[in-house]
Length: 212
Image (cartoon, rainbow, N blue to C red; front, top):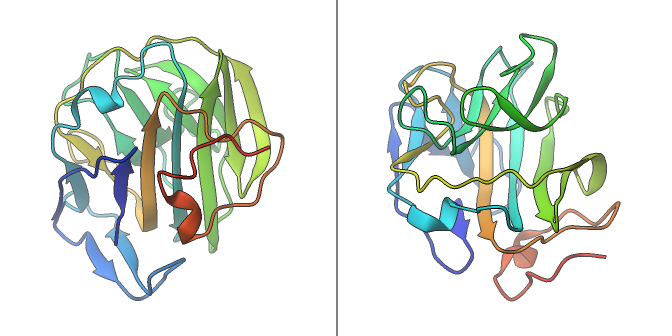
């Protein structure tokens, strides 16, 4: 199902608990990864290495997501840390800094906000993209720019095993469906104020020029 990809290098992933391939919901392929929200339901990316070490440079993180109801406080989409106190990895989670105010975003370490916005819509597929280009970090919902900030944070940690759908301690787990979670180091794929959310063919590594 090509759920995980970073540039041209696919990563090794493993499912735990009730994180399973499901035909209940699908944006492409006829299936997706279903997360039941239990603390033992998640995916593990085995040691992605320097591909997830962005430094101060350009990067893109994108995926399709379907929320099964309003996300809970601290629900995690991605966790790059393996323990508390790690300050240089990145996370994607809900209400992480501002304590249950209906916001979510991309963070570094335990409390550094990189970019944050109100929660995406629920009960439908939404394309999410974080894209940093030359010191500007942008957040898109379905191809529409919803937030833009200046950012040159040094994401310098080479992570160990990362998790999708839960925290490193396997609590605060996401409930819903995920598809095509992809990370591009050194590439700001989206820089315009709007673009057409990609179909499955647009994810190929031959299509990494920024969309204008």
